[in-house]
Image (cartoon, rainbow, N blue to C red; front, side, top):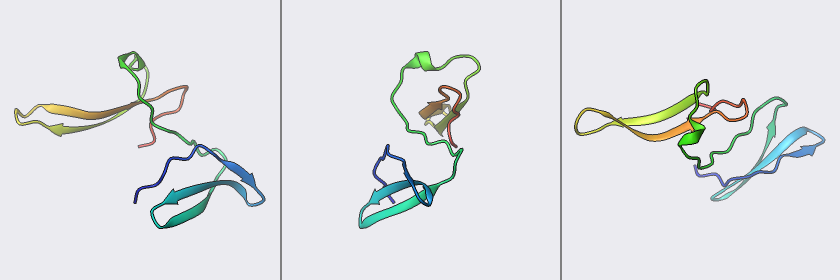
Length: 82
């Protein structure tokens, strides 16, 4: 399922609420306090610093070496959600 990006988190009488929009409809979701909401953004190599947490996705190339498809790096103390 593809879900559109949203940056809004609204306070409702039920708690923190986010509206997800996808092909065929929308869904309101309650987000518990303390749940980090993260969004991937493009960065350059300077984001890779000692002590940061990383998550990476890699494939084995034709030569048997790992080829990285994506690297996610912690920022401002928030670790990649995987």
